[in-house]
Amino acid sequence: MSSELEAVIGLEIHVQLSTRTKMFCGCELSFGDEPNVHTCPVCLAHPGVLPVPNEEAIRYALKIGMALECEIAPRSIFHRKNYFYPDNPKAYQISQYDIPLAVDGRLGDIRIHRAHLEEDAAKMIHVGDSGRIHGSGASLVDFNRGGTPLVEVVTEPDLRSAAEAAEWARLLRETVRQLDVSDVNMEEGSLRVDANVSVRPSGSEELGTKTELKNMNSFRFLERGVEAELQRQRELIEAGGTVEQETLHFDPSDGTLTSLRSKEEAHDYRYFPEPDLVPLAPTEEMLREARESLPELPAARIERYEEQMGLEAEPAKFLASDPGLGGYFEEACRVAGAEVGPGGGGVEPRVVANWITGDLTATLRQRGDEEDFADPTVSAEDLAALVLMVTEKKISHGSGKAVLAALVVEGGDPAAIVEREGLAQISDAGELESIVAAAVEANPEAAEQIKAGNQKAIGAIVGAVMKETKGRADGGEVNRLILEQLGD
Amino acid sequence: MIDREQVLHVARLARLRLSDEDVERMAGELSGVLAHVDRIGELDLDGVEPTTHVVSLENVLRPDEPRPSWPKEAMLDRAPDPADGAFRVPSPQADAQ
Ligand SMILES: [Zn+2]
Image (cartoon, rainbow over all chains, first blue to last red):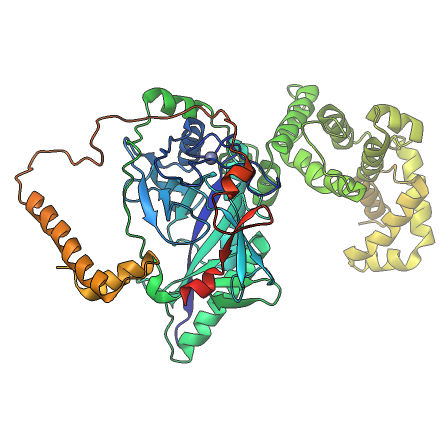
């Protein structure tokens, strides 16, 4: 191939809202209840019933629209999307069409095309097959989920790889989670991601024919599914074929893609305005309330950590991923900085971040339980005190790790643990000098190599000193003394 | 004009089985509906805001407060083929053939 085929990916994300009741009736939402206990004539589409929108669902949708920096339509309307399927008792889904609630937004580098309100379909249980739609004899329908409020978010085709698509979908989930409007659980289906995938020659502005991928119920499957489809399309085109527009079902067990719907019936939804519903015109008060309820969202927090606190991209992303964790980090920084006081230089946020993303996370992970940073195992104050002791060279970095491990297991005061375990750094210069001298003498080969200019050999002597002092020596100081004694 | 093929297409989407006479009759009736809409389209409506509803209301909403759902048995009793506490339906795939 002379020109590379570039990936062009857009995502459609369905977010189930965590309201108490359904979108258009007062039936309670639930997950895991026995089938068909949350139904009424409205959500079962008995004749003569009227839908009435849930105002909380509209509030949630406004929050999502604003968090995605969308323009909110002054007056949006609902449409009927007509299709015949047993999961949909009205034979139409109430959705939004040409005037959606929110348009033209952005999350990170990816543009948002639109975000609109609609209702979820019922759950189908396909009897006597492996759970797939093909080849089943009969199906059971559970209408508990039917009518659950959904917000569908549609991106522009701005994503350029399967990995980028999965990464961005994670950011979207985190953003929606922090809005507190959905459980955003992919396995349980409260966050569902479909991908529109196409390829085109690099540098081209035209869009190739796209296929739609469904059923990727984890970020890993999303990435694998999109990757598989990109490969299929590239091979097809390179072999001289053409991509056909179709909907594909991804099977994570074997990585295969199966065509789901016949083309002739696809997307013939005959939309028309829903005559049972009047327009939705968010009032100033609704808009203000939604705006004021927005927390600082991950994208903004990542930017602040990088630009104002000097963090690298990875730790910034990690710490911003959970508001509890971010709050913990900021509190530890505040305490650590405050205790050094003016002129003391303070502790750099970068150093506090390293302790949290490195040693603390690793130690907590070993323990197995999910850490709740709103109620942390090691308080932000204790962590700050520990980081300060290391920064001020009262204890070595190695001893710091030991104190942290003790804090995770038994709690208590870091200074008291240092005292009890005898971890205070050797402050007597003469004592450390003689230990270094003994270590140099005991490792003549390493000493020769260092003299010959091989800096890596210093590790052996540093290790010996650390062993002798049980980690109570300052690494930098030990390095300096070794080189000094070897006449460097 | 709505032709035979269009009637059959819409009937297929709605899962309606029409006899030949039905198809002929529907083609005529649907054409008549569209002709009526065309006549409305001839009116001079410059400067008239399009509406999607006949009443000038907006934001008819309800609070997010649960109301009792209906008894499951009462709802299932109205179904043609209830099974295992659910609404049993023929395989959608078979239906599409
Ligand atoms: Zn209901």
